[in-house]
Length: 124
Length: 124
DNA sequence: CTAAGACTTGACACCGATGTCAGCTTCAAG
DNA sequence: CTTGAAGCTGACATCGGTGTCAAGTCTTAG
Image (cartoon, each protein chain N blue to C red):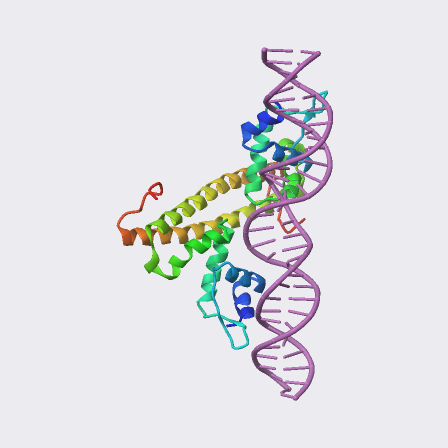
């Protein structure tokens, strides 16, 4: 598939896909004319990249950690520790986010207590 | 308390505290010489601001939403809808983050399956 | 063959919270 | 009063992923 197809399939812009490649997160073969071609599996890989980015991992970190996804043979102890570290970070983030959500939910709750029912969000 | 004390109490830098004030998230009275003074309650307020920022709310959004925390009388339906919207956003973020965590956890798991036990993160 | 649409590289811009530096003022302890 | 620590304002820098524009090249339908 070409870059436009991959973009459409993943929701990432072509710009971002080139950036991922530039950062060593994604590879492609080139056509005779120099245009990128991707295997079908690239869709899943890009999805993973995006979710890790959304989780606050930096592209440099993803580059360190990603290879082991595709290639189980290179799973070194160092990589295991690195992964565990990132997992821990995400876990902490989730915990804090849950606390924040509870605060927000409490506020929304207090509104409904005052107004009777929760106003429809579409009814601004 | 002065700005340095508030910074120490909250973990925010003095720079950030001034920024919060500039953005209308935080107020202070000034001494005769122009230096900021905060009531004790400011600590809690700054903590809230920081957790909302960490949850991905922008300072502009927080400015809209924050007043209702301190002043229940200004809770308009519009504000309720706004809050609900942000709550939803945070909830979505948490859901996606949970998925990502599961992926990472699965990877770590696969390591321990290969190596026997989970390597201690402190044992790099 | 041709033309339109997709792709390429390279460069610059942006956002938003925070860091940092400079130059000056204020506060408080001795 | 003196002096060093702490504050003040204002400005500029940073980071990282993404948007966007320009000028040129490929691809493919007709």
